[in-house]
Image 1: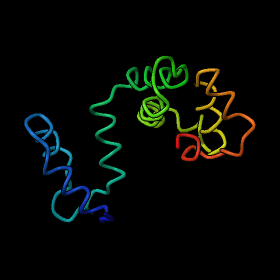
Image 2 (image 1 turned 90 degrees about the horizontal axis):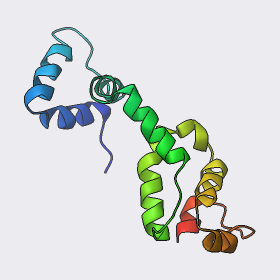
Image 3 (image 1 turned 90 degrees about the vertical axis):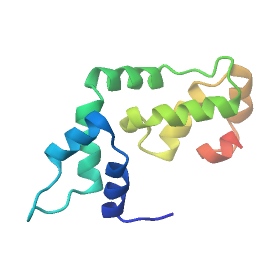
Image 4 (image 1 turned 180 degrees about the vertical axis):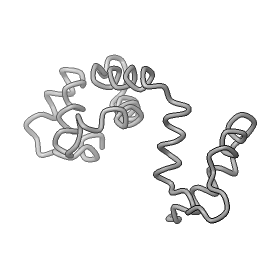
Length: 125
């Protein structure tokens, strides 16, 4: 479902409780100020609630991630959870696929490398 940035802001801030609600009251636009954009709200929340050290730890976790005992689907889910912490490492579909392949078990990786499964979606299917 598509919705406007303005509606995303309204929906997100409606869910705020306690401390987050108090914080929102101090940062939301007043009177004649332009409405806050979804991108700006995301940035503000990121700064407020996601410390840089935690983000760096998640980036390191993504960069060192290996399939290990996970199924391919479990590995793909975890990969997708962590990918947002290192967007520069997977800026293209090819980079994303290369990083995904590098973390796979050797037996599974050998079945994929050399095939024409050059998109992430094709690989996990």
